[in-house]
Amino acid sequence: MNLKKLGLTALAGSLVASSAIAGALDVTGTSKITYASKHNTEVTGNPFSMNTTFGFAGSGELDNGGTMSYSYTMANSAFSASNIKLDLGDSGEIAFGNASSVAGQKKYADVVPTAGEQVYDDVDATDNGMADNVSNANMIGYNGSFGGLTISLGWAKDTGGSDSSWAVQYPDLIDGLTIGFSMGDDGNSSDDTSAWLKYTSGAITAAWQRSEVDYVASGTNDQESNHVGISFAVNDGLTVSAGRQTVDMGAGKVDETSQGVAASYTVGSLTVAAHANTTDDVGGTSGTDDSVTEVSVAFAF
Image (cartoon, rainbow, N blue to C red; front, side):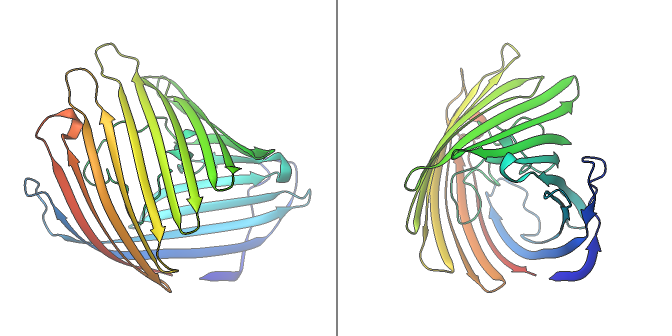
């Protein structure tokens, strides 16, 4: 739904000495009904749930040629994320906010393709081995592209210090191949690194991502994960995918292994999706397994 007649004054005065021209405010939303069947050792309660999200996005042009944009997201009537961006054209973009898409390492936390949820979702609550511990709360960031190389920098003040991260990505290094690397320091407990390869050929996309979390405190096991996945666009509406992640939990623990399959079908504003994920040896504890199967129907407006 586009409210074209609704003006938006960008908050540009605090960032640049330039006036803004009122732009449009776009309002979008999604309502989703989900049925979830979980491992029989869990307390599942009512297997049905409903979630609704609203997004508000606006933009305005500056008289110096730049563009200001703002987005605000609500999930189930509660604040979810927001950001404000200043587009500098060929010089890149300055961003501020608390969404993972703002800048830095979190922007590339999950590059493995999927038709639904990632293989560890709903079965590994701690996202073991994922290099995304750096906070994105009230983050200042920069995104730019130079000679084909994409650069993303992020910094945020945190309790007892500051969080900083950076990421570089080279899309289409050769036809269809993307490579990337990121590093992050949460200022308190861990240093994170991640590297990835992603290749697209026609309707098929495959990716590998390796992440490492090195904890500062002695006696805390470092973690290393390897995540692979592939997706196939059967047609304009149907996509299927499969993936697997293995996490080395460190000394005294066994590897945690997650695998899953997913499918989604979209016709117009309606999307029907399903995924089945299992995790063996959750948290590196042998014999502690978990699984979930979900089916959802979502309507976008």
